[in-house]
Length: 425
Image (cartoon, rainbow, N blue to C red; front, side, top):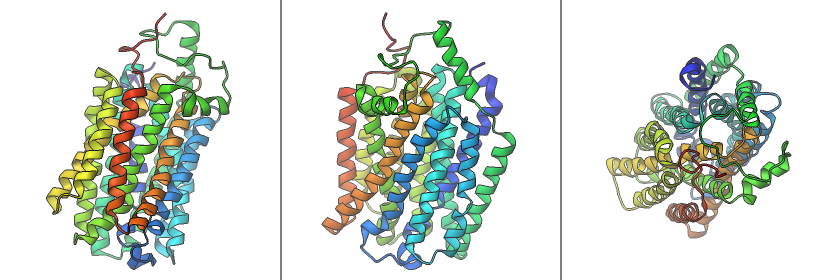
C-alpha cells in the first residue's frame, strides 16, 4: 500500500539515511574552504583553484545521478545506496593525510559518487512509497533531513576545528558518520522498487485513482536511456524548464560552499561565526521545507519555484550590502527560504509528470543537470572572480542567473500538479 502512514518505518529509515548523507557533505562546508590556504596550500586570490574541489564534486555527482537513476530500475534502490557508502569510506583518511589541495579535489570525486548514489536513492525511494498527493511532503521532509545534516555538520566541525586539530576533527567526525550510515543501511533499509512497479501496473490497467497526471505523450512503452535523457533535457517544455532551474539553483549552493566561508573569513569572522552563518542558511533551508513541501501539494509547483528563484537572487545580492554576524545571518536565512521554496518543489514536479516505469531514470536525468550545476557554477564563479579580481563578482553573477532562470520557469513551465492541472481527455 502506498502512503507515508502505512510505510512510516521505512520512511523514517530513508530520512535517517539522507541525514547521514547531509552530514557527510556538510563536513566540507566550513573548515575546508576557510583553511584552504593555511592547511592545503591554495594560493591567496586563486579563486578558480579554490573552487576546483566543488567542480570535481559537481561533475561527478551529476554523472552518478544519471547512472544511478537508470541502474536503480534494474538492480534496485538499496544496492546503490550501500555502494554509495562503501565508496565514501576513504574520504576521512584523505582529510587526515592529504599533502595538497589536489588530494581534496580527488576526495571530492569519491564524495560525488557517494552523493550521486546515496542521496539519489533516498529521494527515489520516498517517491516510490508515497501517494501522488504526498510528493511535496515527502521531498520536503527528505531535503529537510539532508540539508539539516549539512548545516549541523558545518557547525559541529567549525567548533571541533577551533578547539582541536582541524584535520583530525574532520577525520573522526566523517568516519563516524559514514560507518553509522553503512551499518544502518545494511540492517534496516528496504528495497522499494516493488512499490514503483505496483504503481506502474495500476496506471497500465486503469485502476489508478485520482486525477490523471500530465505524462508526456509519444514516449515509448520501454523508453531507452537516450530517449529519457533527451525528453527531460530539452524535448519537453516543462521538463526543460525544470532541468535548467535545477542546474542554475546549484550556483547558489556553490557560492555558499566555496565563496561564503572565504568572503566572511576575509571580513574578520571566526570559523565558529562562519559556521553559524552558513549553518543558518542550511538550517533555514532544511527546516522551511517542512512547510514549503506541503505548500506545493496545496497550491501547485510552478509559483513556489519561481518565487523561490527570485528570493534567492535577492538574498545573495543583499549579502554584499550588509555587514556583521547578525546581518549576514539574515541574508543567509533569506537565501535559505528561497531554496526551500524551489528545491523540493522541483523534485516533486519532475515526479508529477514522470511515469512510474521510468521515474527513476527521469529523476536521474533531472538530478544530472541539477548537480552538474555545482560544477558549472563553481567553474564560472572561479573564472569570473579571477577575471574581476574580486569574490563579489561571483555574488552578482549568481544573483543575475537566478533571476533569469526564475523568469524562464514563469514563462515556459506548465503546472504539473495532477489535481490542479490534470491531463484532459
